Image 1 (cartoon, rainbow, N blue to C red):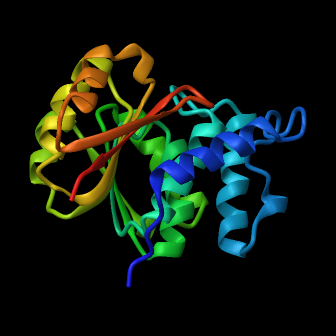
Image 2: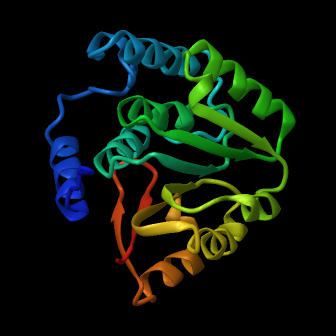
Image 3: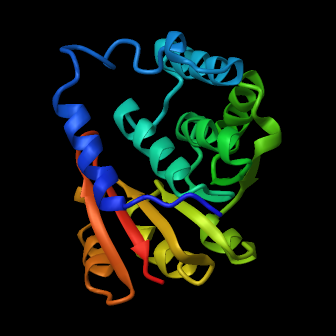
Length: 218
């Protein structure tokens, strides 16, 4: 039986933990390898830490949002995860922390060749290259090739394209699956779309840069 968890309860727990963390915790070393449970986790966290130190996190999520991505993905026991906007692989590595536990796979889309190449390098350094497929090209066209069911989809690309990504992802996201969207304060049309549909339930995690967490109702 697949694990399930109340998304509302999860968000409350995230907010509570963020409010009561020690001053400065997670700021300079947000992905501390010393907190790893396994050697695989230690390796991924070490690469995340080095990416921040060496400024290789172009347009990436902050660590608070990376941790949230990991929690949501693992909480729904995701096996098939899709990411729109790979950049240099920072958010993808947070997702891989969950996929190591769930036995899942990440398909991530990036339009820029140089960033896609850097992401592949980071995935290899972290030892997760077998968990990830990097697809180069225009994601608006490429995601038409996705196969259902998708358990979690994460949107973090050009903001004018968010609603189109949503509409193309919804048919392949399974009932009970999640669509996560980053920087939603910059995309009011997306917020209107996910809060105005009877088929969706959306809450907002605003500890980092803002994630809309949308449940596709069963």
